[in-house]
Image 1 (cartoon, rainbow, N blue to C red):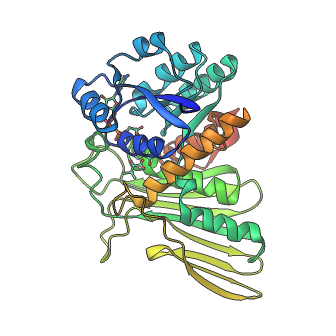
Image 2: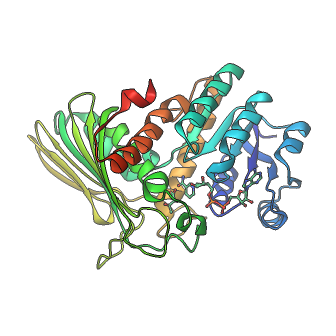
Length: 344
Ligand code: NAD
Ligand code: 89V
């Protein structure tokens, strides 16, 4: 019998990756699934052999029999579902973006802390193999102390065919994709104190912004640029690669096309390929993201076993989510926004 029984809510586009990831962990079994759409429930239930199926999360929690819940629905339902998990004292994972507003996200953290349950935001991009490789170079001290950085995601990939809701929201690229890039900037360069942002909508067929350029002042003095675009038509489509540039006191680091990592420092220049593993159930070009799902899930189970909060806990992710809010505010007002004013 598996050591941990989980339940999953939301059997849509991305949840299939989460189901594969759970299936690969020997000590985890997904005991129940829930989706208000009976067709999605049937497809995922049949594919992964889950017989306990619910159209209502209330009914699934009332029936119980699981140690944690994995919430893979779109953002509008996140607060209600995390609060439901907290009311049943069930540890919860919630997909990004955390919540529709920062106030909702703060309420969700408060509910989880009051219930004494761990809450992890499924912020998986910092778990990508190439990003972990960048972090390892920084921690090795090989290039010294960073003073400038850039986290860049520029693509013309059609994300709307798989996720049609992305074309409809008033907010698009910062909330959906930039949120990952901003979290990577925090992961590599530390927390930020000020944000200055500019946005554009280039694709006339969508409602939200598809280009954003953000300047972050980090608390430790590092300046970083986080730039994201789904309107960038390159000769070779890099989706979903994140490029990183770092200038530091003793050298430089560049993570570029095809997962090529170059680190240059006093002891010389090293060039390596830090490509993600292609898991048996994964498919290109998504394999980088898919592997990071498996890695964050492993981290969740390890922390659950230790009784500790995960790295991307709700409280931690408030700081990433505040950067999203700050970017929209800054772009709207044409002003620099202080993070302290949002986080209190
Ligand atoms: P989707 O619309 O394909 O799937 C969501 C599913 O949730 C649908 O089947 C819907 O019926 C169900 N649902 C919604 N509210 C529900 C409720 N209250 N109770 C039961 N079922 C409910 O969406 P998706 O593309 O799979 O995205 C889901 C989430 O995953 C989003 O928050 C998205 O941002 C995130 N996402 C994350 C990554 C990543 O790399 N971390 C990648 C893609 C999507
Ligand atoms: O990671 C995500 O949240 C996805 C995608 C990479 C397509 O933007 O929505």
